[in-house]
Image 1 (cartoon, rainbow, N blue to C red):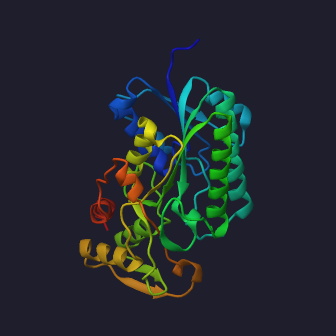
Image 2 (cartoon, helix red, strand yellow; image 1 turned 90 degrees about the vertical axis):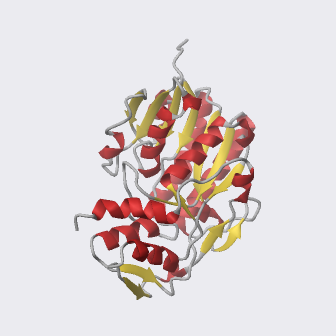
Amino acid sequence: MSSKRVILVTGGAGYIGSQLIRDIALDPRFAGVTVRIYDSLRHKNYSGLMDLPVEGRYEFVEGDILDRLNLHRAMQDAIAVFHLAAIVTTPLSFDHPEWTEQINHWGTAAVVDCALRAGVTRLIYSSSASVYGPGGPFKETDPCRPIGPYATAKRKGEDEVRQAEERGLQATIVRLGTTFGNAPAMRFDASANRYAYLAGVRRPMVVYGTGNQVRPLIHIRDASSVLRLCLADPAFIGETVNAATEHPSLNDIAATVQRLMPTATTRYTDQDILSEISFDVDASKLMRMGWTPQVTLEAGLKEVLERWRGF
């Protein structure tokens, strides 16, 4: 019997995963574990695997979560799984519906099944605040009416996780708001990071509709902190929690960028009607369970904008 203790992170080279794998290694609650990264590298995000902290113990397995044989092998010696691997789009995108369903729904089914077959019982599932659909702020007990392939597949993934609990899985579902801020493997498709990028390269920030639509946000380091707390604290077993720390409108995000970079400009358009939908969540349950955010919208955007200072 191996004495190795492994925490497996699917999608560990991605935007959230690249931050999480570093934070696990530096978190004393997980001292001595090996962080095993499982990622297809479909997006060529090699930077997520580079310059890892020397304090960590890392292994990398390149693979797709639909490859059950490879995934099952990656589960060996694992004491817990952070399941982040997904086709990630903006919440209201209708791009690639079949592939999104395959990865985000059936891929999650493969992860929970392989985990149980390998004897892994603890799983943290990174879901999305978009599963509720438009409106809000929604609490965890409110009904979900997702719109679009991404949100729908994420909601089906939650169902797979909950059904696996009947087979002994000890799971936590984290409905993350839209993540923003610096990470080793960056993304610039969602509002906050997108606006920082556009301002940074001296292009207008494009706001759809009036800009009054709300988005639930969470900084990437805060998202990592929530995920790690959910594994470290047994009180989160069986729970679903919303994780968002800021609830700005698109106008608020653009105004924050302009405070930090007065030369930034804004352009309004009605080209994408779906982007004019507002959605939000209530994260008070997470706060009551002992978690406190650390990074504000302004501080997080400032860090990103500083990376474009050569323009």
